[in-house]
Length: 114
Length: 116
View 1 (cartoon, each protein chain N blue to C red):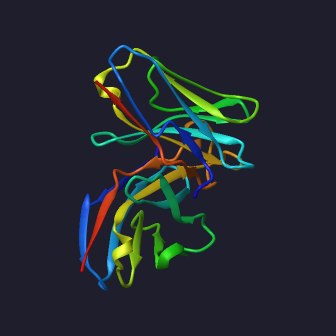
View 2 (view 1 turned 90 degrees about the horizontal axis):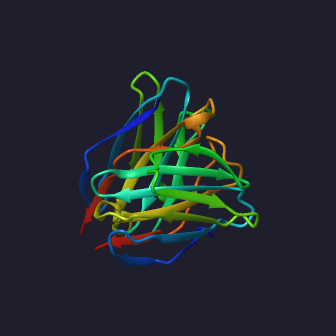
């Protein structure tokens, strides 16, 4: 058990809808990362937060947004969903958010857009 | 910019045989390199990491990896495969410098199958 909790585990929704994915980092970790995993793109970095502030941005679409709250949990909001957004979304956390710190991954949220 | 190439999307070995999963990296700065493993229906977990202290890095479950700067490689090995090693393995690179270097860049992954 990595200590990173993601909810829900599965989400099925229709095109055009909006969903929120939630992540609680491992106790003591200040940084949260979001990744998207799909068969064709592999693991793609979306965004990173450190202690409530955005630290780095990757291949995140404008339809997607995220935030990290004062209690350090994070939410990833996906709107105007398209079929191509179907994927596994992983949250990961690290102690200090620096480049050589290992990431601890949650078990992911599987999003299916129909 | 940094990148990782994993040679072979699928590797199949017999139980007890040597496991060799290949990873080559590209980085404009001294890299930090990682191997992660993903079991079915689970998130990724760290196997080992290279941070320049030693070129041969030992990880969990009997895995090790050797950093070879001249070959820009960080191949993962295990002398004797076990059925429980069947999983997908990801090589990842991170570099110093801030900005986008804060993120880990993952390879496409190598699915390891272990045959009885």
